[in-house]
Amino acid sequence: MKIIVDYDLCESNARCMDVAPEIFEVRDDDKLYVLDENPPESARERVLRAIKVCPKHAITLAE
Image (cartoon, rainbow, N blue to C red; front, side):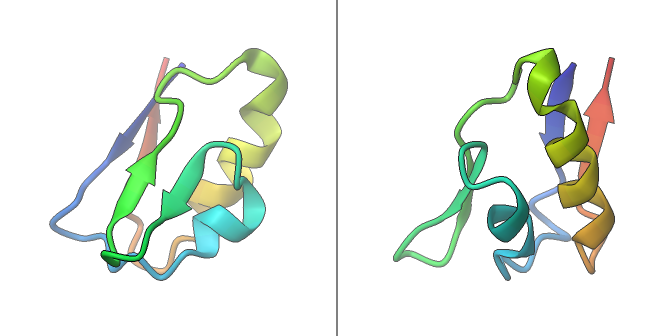
């Protein structure tokens, strides 16, 4: 799986980071960084939750 972020939609509100801090990080520059674009299968549930909580629907998952 591969995480894709539409940075034009992303507001860097860190909701995804709250759910999966080992994968998403909002830094002091107020930008979202994906720490692992291809996370292990064991992280799938957390990634799906992060996608669901994103208020701007800026995160998608490609298989």
